[in-house]
Length: 415
Image (cartoon, rainbow, N blue to C red; front, side, top):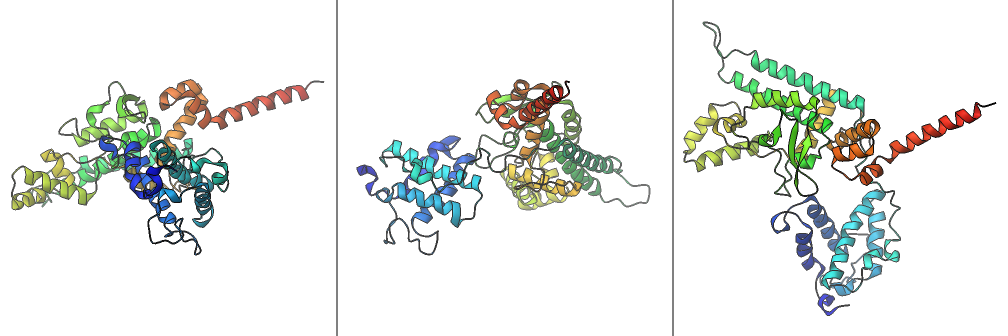
């Protein structure tokens, strides 16, 4: 054991490790950082004896002190693997994923001089872990052609009805008729929501763009959501911040162009910096509008009057060019859960009972691999051909099975 790690509490290294693994300025963002932080905190609680079975008193044997690196060895990680596999009631692949976060931290500690050996990767430590079948939790859903058709048809009908209700509503009533001046604004707001949802669905269904490349990630400041200035509806392309940490062009096929063009006309964004998929959260928008107008020198009564002139704060934001934040990835999942339910689509999955965003990407990958092969699919999916072959190996296996069947039929059919 190195002298550096002898008396260092485990938790004192977490923040530096997370900064090294995080994204953005100061390593403050990224899904990996968030997930790793959660699992490291759980590991620390278990090590201190705050989690686990009734007879587990922590790696410091119940001593009134925080566990340090002097307490770590292969036996500790073996016990933690056993805890994940049994005490928490997790699925096998999830256990593997959670253990990997702690194991990666252990490896970092070796490089930093806190530990002399990578105890977490010893065979004795990993023995209690369930077998890894090579699949990632929640990464198997793929929208079938029937599901894609049902969902896109539902959002299209919903958007058409809402837009017609807005465009057919008169600005003024007939002579003698009273018309609520906010009625048309309410209709526009409903049309905007339906048109946004339709645009989101078709982009997820047909572009195979990762949802994290399309929308805002609160944990990664670089992923602030695609803006109108980054979409070219004439050339059929969209600039997105890719998983490989750089901006790149993604294709917009024809089925996505018309819904996006209709939606843009309805939004009429004040600037190209407006998010394509803004949040509709009322509390968020109310706070945003009040703060932005106050910063422009409006008094509280003037702000209230401005808000009273519009049916919703989103419309205030559009009129005053107060740019709202983009929808988050979690927000997109909530929308798809609601739309799947509204459309009455049956989804049979171990993890998701709705059409999840990643399922749209995988479904499009299935179409491309079957139609054009792995090379073309890899380019469209922004992945290596090797990765695409691995993810969609079941297609090749099925095709080889068909060839084998044909060969057997040919041989068996001979005299």
